[in-house]
Image (cartoon, rainbow, N blue to C red; front, side):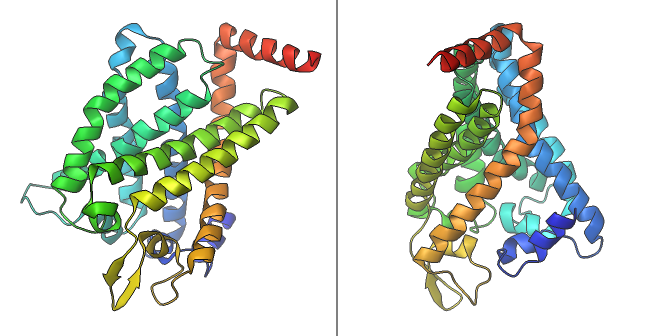
Length: 304
């Protein structure tokens, strides 16, 4: 909690991140944000595990993505100011009762992360997870359903241009998919690092290479998937400058953007490892086949 408070109040932290803490109840807000972090990062491990079971579980990604989004919504709705949610999904324009429109738009956006995080986790666990091929088949089925819905609601029928204007080509399909690749890269890098802690020193070196490679891939996917020239607030800047700068008055230069991205990527990897490592240990211990595969890989590494 103390570390989270320091991060949220540091001058170098982007202002749009600092604004996530609700000033009316800052301690509760931080606690809920911490819970949301664990849920957002941790639940995809369970999605991958269920998809790997095959058969009817091949169809489980859409309902699990819905559960993933609903719980995240409840935590974030209580944790952050409503204005921060409006900045992302827009203010209601359909005259629906209660907060149904805002909830629906949030679920459509969040499902994009659920799909990307599941892909990254399944890729990272490919060699140790029994039923990995089934997991990918289930992911393909779910992604083919969820990604078009997410794109339509988040981009084509958006209630605000706050996200669309940050995407290359004014929200093109290609830009949307590139951002998805970036999210998958982050998830893959984090999960690879978490799994490497269970697989011995030789595998850790390989995981470090995969983590760095995923970070580079994610950066270039973001670079080409986001808008490079935005004219707003009397300034000209790129989407990454807008997202990573400490505030609008002090926009980061190209070199500083790369440094800030590297720091952010490192923090995300650390968060994924912290959350997912105990979950993957549980998955491995619950699956004798997975434990045997890891043991065989350790024996092979030791022999060489």
